[in-house]
Image (cartoon, rainbow, N blue to C red; front, side, top):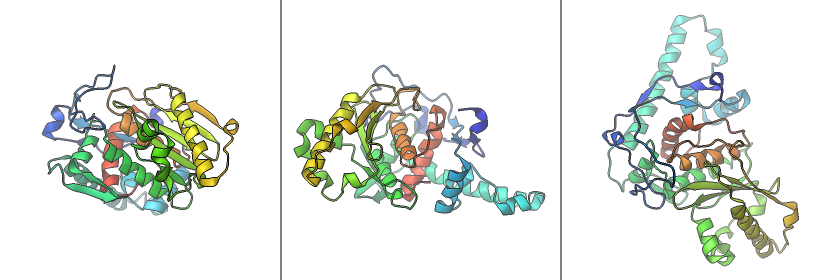
Length: 326
């Protein structure tokens, strides 16, 4: 991303957690695991001080976000001047007051994130919603260079679904990270009841987070475009996964709607490395699929890169704690 398109944070954030001096990796199924991705060796963060930035967004989306959420993380990290700010631009006292207010809000949010990533009982519940609980141990997988676990992935997907209920967003359904594994091991019969309270064909987008033991990927079914796409931050091909999900849709249509789905009208596609942002380390795949889901569920182009991952990790902590996407 060109440098001029990035909105830098107001200040550098320091994480002085003693544990971050020695990177702790978490496997997706076992948050205490330490084995790195095949062929991708993680490394200890060279500095405790982490400089972060938020990806640029278009003005219409920024204004819409303000109307939906008020002045929150995005306004603190990527502030846009209001009309009142413009009118009083020449008034030093007004500018100083505005900057102080932003600094206070940002500092409060940063302290909250740092506290959540710090010490605490592993089983302490930090957030509970969507019939899911995120504990202190779970939230710590959002520390720098740690692997996200199922609880964090599924909770974030729940937040994406919740946001989609608002006006102006595509309707979204997100499956649990255990869905694809269950489907491939037991067939349609093993997951047929997973949609007893939802009509997939009334949704615009269906998100399927997939755990490949040591790597997170995302499959996306778009019923509007009749496509099944595979998103992998390491650029690997997943057409077979798409075909498995398309077959599932056929069975779901016959079972729930008594309608035969014409596969000839559908296309499958594995996103190429040049089409989507790619990771350059062995630990951020979980964050990447969460942000894929975030941008896709807003019909927005993916403007982020690997450099935004530290910012996204902290932002996700705040969003999970407050059960709201910014």
